[in-house]
Length: 259
Figure 1 (cartoon, helix red, strand yellow):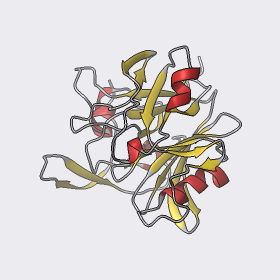
Figure 2 (cartoon, helix red, strand yellow):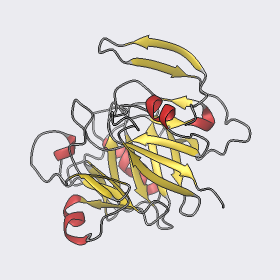
Figure 3 (cartoon, helix red, strand yellow):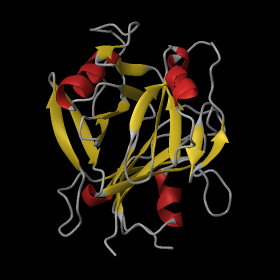
Figure 4 (spheres, helix red, strand yellow):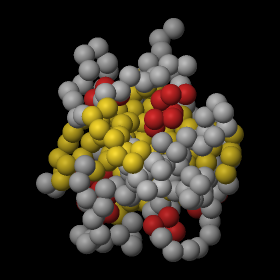
């Protein structure tokens, strides 16, 4: 295993016992390919990271080699060979113990079932959805209802979250175009070429702004909200590793090796 070489600027201990590491925002490290870039949309600052079929592979991760839930990128980085890591984000709703509360598949195995219950909160603002696919491509975002009825084979990876932001090019019917709830948020959508666009806001934004970004900038017809306040990004090339809160499911994007 290879530990990530990360430059720590400062650290603050939270009451719950977690450490917040603040990493310097730096230009991309020379010789390290970056899949992430800063963008501005409707006057708001975001970071966009793009996974390209044939160039990248996508995996989901939640527990380490010791069987303990990672709960963040620092433990993931200490547990894997980081040389091929392009970026990672958190994605999928989870409970206080960081266990998924919806569908979760890893390495072709379903570890948690699809959640179709009704309750309060963003996850249950239906339709919610699933981001899934093969390791090297055919990545998709689909409503949970369609996933349950149309997908017969087990995907290599999958994570359920919600709400959907875009459904067939239209904003979720219960998302206000100019909502007043502003938070750090992240999302994923797949464009017509099959590339997966992962976007995290670098300042508080509304669901409506995030949905329009996925449609008008990323070119996605279906897009899924991944998380809110706890949204986080690991971008090794820019020496960024967000660690404000304990996380649940992690989406790991790696550069494919050419044998």
